[in-house]
Image (cartoon, rainbow, N blue to C red; front, side, top):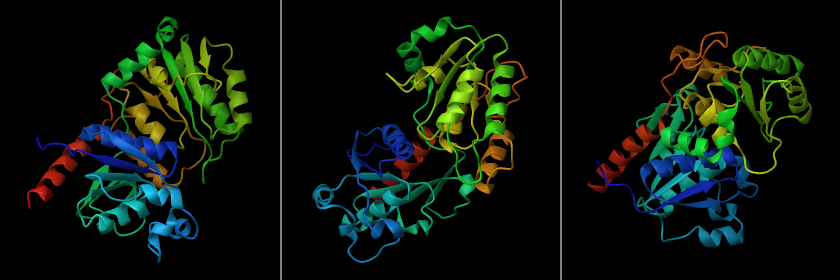
Length: 319
């Protein structure tokens, strides 16, 4: 197997979901990454990843001081803002830095050494590596670590149902109909068990309150945002997982746990999200909450993408 690179930068725009994907890929490549949070200034932020004159001026003076040689062996960006910087870095390093962009950059992928994009984006190119979902760090060891970190969840009655709540996005409203559907789905899945619930920073407070009040009679926890985030414990101890339909990242991570996953919706989903849900169903990764609990083949793609990247990096080095 090709040796991993020795150094890497993870270029972040500060979005936690984007940074998580890039860090997961760096870890799978076997390299410790330096995380560089580099927000773009206007007007470069408006056009990214398209280039306009004065590219380095997209960064503040302080950030420009760190965005210089020696360049890493690999740079990994995720999201549109980071895509401008990984694109620039490929040129600045004279091709010595292998630049990987996660998610569809919305322009021709030839500007990067490799682009990792989910199939529902329908991005094509010789350097495009396709996934079903999003990259993440979840494997058996990660789940076991989550259980070790939150041992108190083991005493909760089974089935333990993890509820992961995201937030509204274009075409997906977090309204009373969705909250009621979630409540019904959780109750059907729990069937005398318990609930391990968490909302996100994107969840409307009123939506969270409705869920919290409706599920108060079921044993378990509903994280209030204080103290250590129990998310690893939720996935580690879950027998079933209920996820709102909005987040590709949360659904991908839920499907990596190897248990039945349910994602109720109350209206037609936006086209890309609908294609993603359809692909999950085709793979048998989304289940009916009335069905008995059963082991499910987990969706784990990060290691395979890393293995392919190592081959490509080694092949280029051998030229």
